[in-house]
Image (cartoon, rainbow, N blue to C red):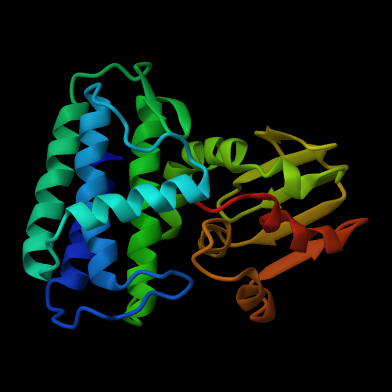
Length: 257
């Protein structure tokens, strides 16, 4: 996990260091690439600080609170030069990884996504880099930094994030069950009943909807990097079951910070 976090950071640095234009837009975001990179510089430092017990400026994972906090932190941090940002980004990533050394795997860290073990915290850090790295890759029309091998590493955080970002208001009285089938025999189930969510770490046979896709497509949809319709129309997602139409509702039941 440590190696993949640093490798991913280095790939993002390599993508952004040659850039000079500041206003390259990121799809499905109000940010440009330089803003996203500045955010990563800030977040890697915060990851180390929170790990070491400092106060977390994010009160919780509510999208409005996250957006407002991001805006405030970016306004306070003025650097937008790509080369300088890249250097700071790698340095902050190394500082974070160094801070994790010597910490027991069962050490509990309080984050805006709730309490995390060190493993889940590392999973979160990698996932966060891969989300923004993939946005940058797509904006530059370059190969994605996300690879199939990354999915098992980020799954611990994705499952916790689903529990935290589940939108009870959007779910209302909705009830439905899903089994997700991904490549490399990764399967799990999601059960929603009257506004309550349960994630099962195994495939349930008797569910309302089965969704099969590759790990990259699932990552891009679940993290809102791409709209689900883009991948559905490309034939990247296969759906079956007694209620296949509820597949389209699943993504809307979770808030995107």
